[in-house]
Length: 142
Image (cartoon, rainbow, N blue to C red; front, side, top):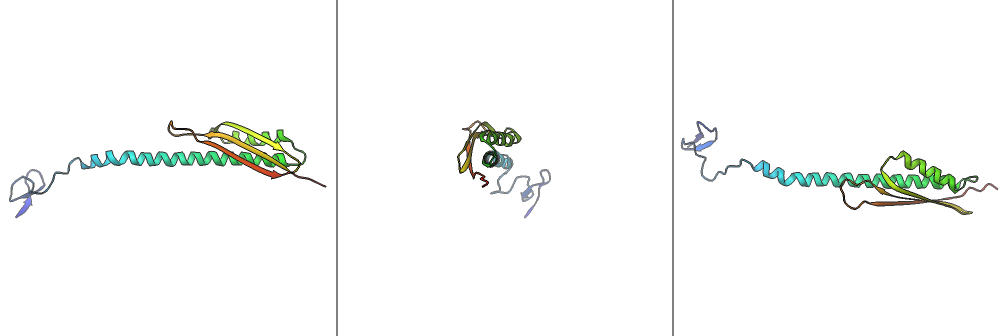
């Protein structure tokens, strides 16, 4: 016959306050579970944040390269216009891409812009390098 113990409120055997045989005391098991799971969850969150920052840096580099190539491809523009357009896009991106360099070239048939830089990092691990290149045909009005 089992009933609730008088003092502890736990299930006891035959009217005593002792726990039934075979039942373990599970106090503290939640703490152990949290200690094991918490670092894994934080690691997954930091990895997701790093992937998002890297992707944002790549998108910013590609947008700057496309803008520079588009500006350099206009009939009356030069490579200096390519640099200005790419720099304007990079400035609007804040510090998502640091240590940037812009390379522009204009030929008779195409304009090419290349943007390289380093994306932000959540932890002090190797910083991801990002590079994007865009090429556009130059305008020719006959």
